[in-house]
Length: 232
Image 1 (cartoon, rainbow, N blue to C red):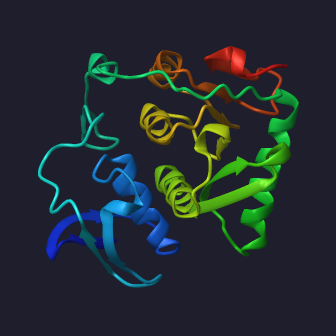
Image 2 (cartoon, one colour):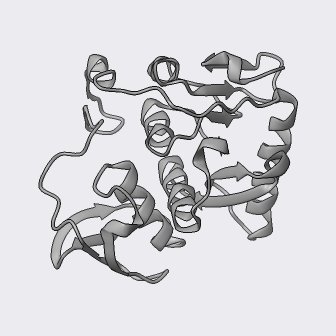
């Protein structure tokens, strides 16, 4: 567990695998709505393996609740979700990206090959952002939590200045509503997973123009959201 300090004050704990912490911090701050981009960060003091993260924000200590945080939960024990809140003020993605479904298994395979190349990763989730010609430019993050893995690749993408509107987000885990919101925050138009997709995730994806391909490589593959982004 890492302690996040912003402008010298404790802000939050982040439960994560302590690698790629810089990318995780930037991705999490962005997808939670605390920063609008890396230019909002004056300095970031963090090293893999340490227990504290120190961030200096140009915008000061966050005081307003971030956009798109309508969920108050208590983990697996239960919680409260108001689905109507998700659809307030949501704008359609402007990306015109369309993707051949036949190329998506290669994107997923490349993500898992990268994970395997890092050694023993049993029990880890991973996520990737694939972009460039034939989606061969790959950013990969891994973590015990699938949401953290997504934040890590988003943070890496922000640092590298990739074109999120031309990228595919792949994840090893189930696609839930908050993962779709993370993709929406940076404008990623296509999400792919070998796992299932929640009903609320599919509804948000349709509302904002994101295509989700679930259960990839299985006979009952599903395409949800803006389905016309997947061409075959």
